[in-house]
Image 1: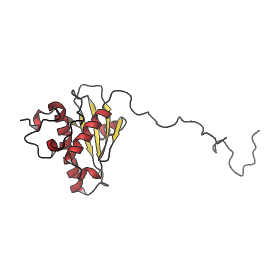
Image 2 (image 1 turned 30 degrees about the vertical axis):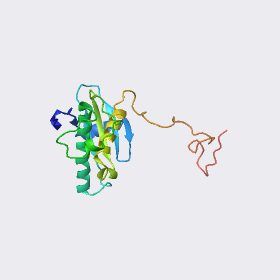
Image 3 (image 1 turned 180 degrees about the vertical axis):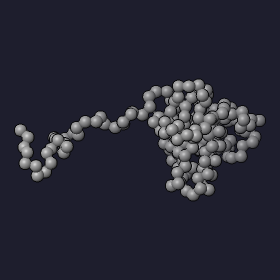
Image 4 (image 1 turned 180 degrees about the horizontal axis):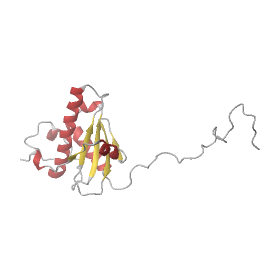
Length: 180
């Protein structure tokens, strides 16, 4: 029998600057959550933070979503350590019954990363096993080695195409000065 204390421990993000830093990393989107992650250079364990905005619901619903996501992340990390089919005797949710064999497992040695889970309204009523699977998939995506998002994303800055001259280059209307 495995307890939650046997699972790999993940630290918590507590400071705003840690949440903002994770926002500059990779992202994973699904119906129930958005996950942002940024790899760190130190040897500290994986750290996870949760955000549920007021748009999602009242305080009771937001706290319930946070509790469900906290437990889902613990179970997803435990699944990586114990294997996808091992049922825990103390599981309070429908984890073992609905788990599929092709469900992803978190990376075995947890990478040093900061991960932020931003909840959406469907996380309140979603099956618990789908929250676990979503987080496990997200962890693979956001902790993948490689570059983060571009600094200023999108098209390169400069003159716009097809506009000839920009309005900034043109003289203000009613100005009699004519440029040669």
